[in-house]
Image (tube, rainbow, N blue to C red; front, side, top):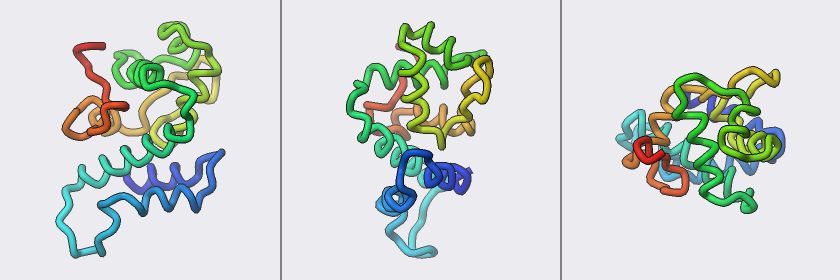
Length: 148
């Protein structure tokens, strides 16, 4: 999972791969040499998720945190997966706004090929991460299940 998310992040359509790699390498979990640190598996993936979210949305200052959380919550909290158009309608946003925002984190999601195909998290660990305040420590991205 970690390797696939990393490759997808490096292969982002609109970003320079060397800049993307620098972001990943700047993560605190990546500064220690292999075998010289004791890390839990979930710590590494959580760090990767946080790096991707922060890097992706730091360059997208036009969107405020409430819009980002609303759209992300529609992806990770729904029982039945929704297409982009349904997310836009449900959250009262423009289709292009939803498409652009989710495109920023294309390495964490499976984005639809057709207009009626649903958006879904690439792996179950992403919804688990973003809804757990102990894992998703940046409250700009944390999604609280009970309050949504």
